[in-house]
Amino acid sequence: MAAASPGDYLEGVTGGQPVATNTGREVVVQATVPGSESGGPRRTTDTDSTGPAPLASAAPCDRAISLCRDGYTVGIIRQPTLTDLASFAPAPPALTSEPTGIGIAGLPTNFVATGSEHTATGELFSLPVTVRFTPTSFTFDHGDSTTTTTPTGGNSWTDTGQAQFTPTPTSHAYPRRGTYTATTTVTYTAAVNFGNGWIDVPGTLPLTSTGNTIQVYEARTALVAHTCIEDPTGPGC
Image 1 (cartoon, rainbow, N blue to C red):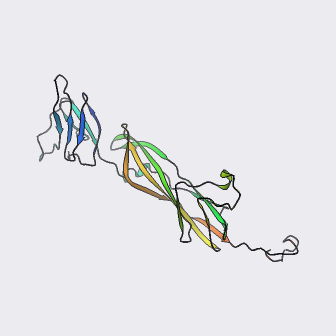
Image 2 (image 1 turned 180 degrees about the vertical axis):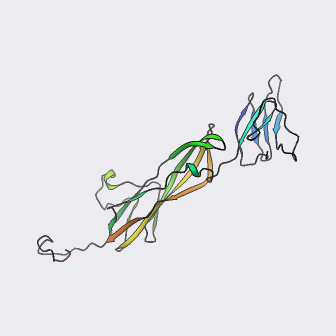
Image 3 (image 1 turned 45 degrees about the vertical axis):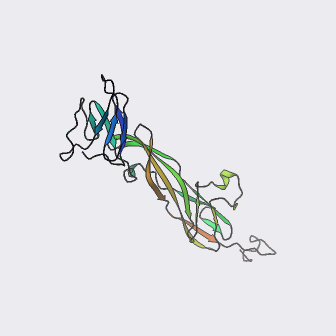
């Protein structure tokens, strides 16, 4: 049994009304032992052959996850990492553009990315857990060496009641015609809950969409005597 590390935290302490602290070298539990007037520190430390004497236990104790003494059980769960939460992670975001797959040089192409709070339940360290991923930023790579970072994934022109080619916080105007591949990366933070409150997990998780191909055209105007229907070979037809 390895001693508690600074990254460990307490799942719970049973017996009386104890107060537990983690010094990084040992877990100190102070409480009133049933039947006594007052309680002194009850120290739970490393119990391997090179450490202190084995701890006495007045009740059965699973030493794989707990340290016990005088009827008190201190459950220790190591700090989860993002690697530990890989199976709980949300799916990569999806990216769409307006107009679908095309753009006009000099006019806004509107991008919309999926990505919302994601909660999953399961088992971690042999204990039931709820894992929550929260998006904190959306970075749009337009494929022309420019990027835009926003706090949300944007909205379509239809959803906001705006006319086509209206600039939005997630739109981009390509300066010249060509074929571009756009992507978005959603950055998530994570937290876990073993039943005793949310605990933040260090670091962030970036997830990137598949590429969205945008064909950008040039728009030219000309004064003509006939429409393209009337003269299919006319300028711009």
